[in-house]
Length: 254
Ligand SMILES: [Zn+2]
Image (tube, rainbow, N blue to C red; front, side):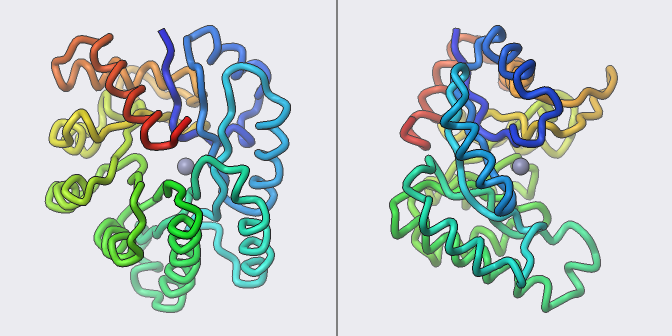
């Protein structure tokens, strides 16, 4: 058995060597390691070169919550100079979750400018793009379609079903993590999405608040997402795993 964690912040894990060993033991073969800012991009490129098992595939980008105008140019320069070492652009996107952002035109403009740069880069280098779209699903989809990026992943999708339909129609993907075991929004979205368009991930080190108790995720917990998804979809676990792996390999070309 091998499984791929398609979204983890491994540079933020407290015990990285331990987490890698536990992931390997749990059957995790590959991890897509996403970045959020310039220091994490630099750190991940180093980790990808030094880690053995599981295999680390860095994705380079600036998280919408981490966009700083004073650091923007340095981030863009670094991205352009190093993007050929990445399996994807991300995580990037828009985050309108908080009310102050929805009210702050300048903040939204700042996020959109950064997102637009990432989308152009993905198109130019024919790379997939990993999108954080919390509360901003509609704008993320519109910008992505307009930018004509081909391989697109709406990570941890828990948004409206009408937008999910448009994401799937466009040929894009969605992913889910361990929250698919208990979160009504995740379950509704993943119940609706076709199996051929779903990837699994952990977004480690997120603290998940499952009814049975909370836990701090690390890449091995992608197994929880897979098994909960199999139960939700009423599918054979092995059959689902084959589909999840095929989707991840086709999407990231790993
Ligand atoms: Zn993330």
